[in-house]
Amino acid sequence: MTIQQDLLDITAAVTECKGADFKLQPLKIRQPQHDEVLVKIVATGMCHTDLIVRDQYYPVPLPAVLGHEGSGIIQAIGPDVKDLKVGDHVVLTYGYCGKCTQCNTGNPAYCSEFFGRNFGGADLEGHTALCNHQHDAVHDHFFAQSSFASLALSRENNAIKVPEDAPLELLGPLGCGIQTGAGAVINALKVTPASSFVALGAGAVGLSALLAAKICGATTIIAVDVVPSRLELAKELGATHVINSKEQDPVQAIKEITRGGVNFALESTGRPEILKQGIDALGTLGKIAVVGAPPLGTTAQFDVNDLLLGGKMIMGVVEGSGAPKKFIPELVKLYQQGLFPFDKLVKFYDFEQINQAALDSQKGITLKPIIKIQG
Image 1 (cartoon, rainbow, N blue to C red):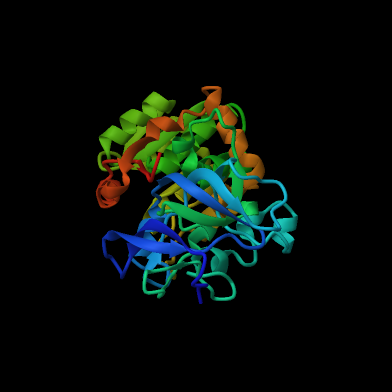
Image 2 (cartoon, rainbow, N blue to C red):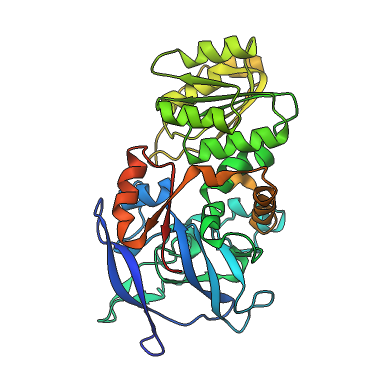
C-alpha cells in the first residue's frame, strides 16, 4: 500500500485502538504526489472530533494518526501544485473533491465525497502515505492531513496560505473548530445587527461563535454553560448575559432576556436535550445552527407545531459552511485587527503532553488545546 523507497522519518501520535492514549511513535511518510504538499507541522489544534474518533463515535479505521487543525510550512510540493510553493505558511483544513456540485457552488463542506476524504483512513483508492519501520501501513488522511505528526501530506486545495507575519503556531484551529463556530454565525445563520444570539455551550466552538456574533453586530449575546470559568470568559469576550443551566432554566431565562425568544442560536454540545432547549428558546422566525456531533444514529425530539407555527428553522452546519480559501484568511485578518481574539481560548502543550491536553479538554479545563509539534 505504501511505497517503500524515498520515505522520510517522522514522529507521529498514533491512536492504536478504541479509547487508547495517543502514543508517540517513529513512522515514515512518502513524498508528495500529484497536487499534494508536504508540510512541516509547527502546531496542531486538538478538536472534539479527534477525541470522538479516538473513541470510535465515527468508524475511522485504527491504528491511525489523527489531528486535523495543523499549521506549518510547506517543505515539498507535488508536480501538479499550481499556486503554493516551498516556504509558504499554511493552515490545513478539511478535505473536499473540488469538482462536485456543492464544491463548484462554494459549499465544499458539503462535498459529495466529504466522509470518505476525511474519515476513510486512507485516500479514496485505499492507499496510505504512512507506515511504520516494518513497512506496515498506518491509517492516515484524517481530514486530508493527519497532522498529529512532524510532517503531514495535504492536497493543495485544503492547504490555505496565510500571511507570514501572523503567528503560525496559533492558527491551526482556524482549520476546523474556530472556523466552525465563527462560520456558523457569519456564513450560515447570517446574524444581523441589533439582533439576539445565544451560544448553547461555551466551549471553543461556542465562544468562537460568540466572537463572531459580536462582529456581526448582535446586541444581545447570551452564553449558556455549566462551567463558571467559561461563563466568566464569555463575559470578557462580549457576552451581555450568561446563564448557568445548572442554576436556571435556560429556556425561561433566554425568553426573559430577549422578551419572547432569541433570533439566532448555536448548539455545540452534541446533546439532543440541549438542542431541544435551543429550539424552544427561539423566537418567531428564529434560527438555530447545529454543529455538535453526537454518536451516529442519535435522534432528537421537539414540538413540531411549535416549529411550524413559529416559523422556526433548524440547520445543520459543517465546518462553518464557508469556503475555507476565502474564510480562513478573513479570520486571520480579523484577528490581526484585534476584532477576533480567539487566542484567549487556547492553551499550548508540548507534543509529549498530548494525552494531558486530551484529558484537560475532556474535563473542560482547557477550551482549545494546541499541540506544539516543532519550532
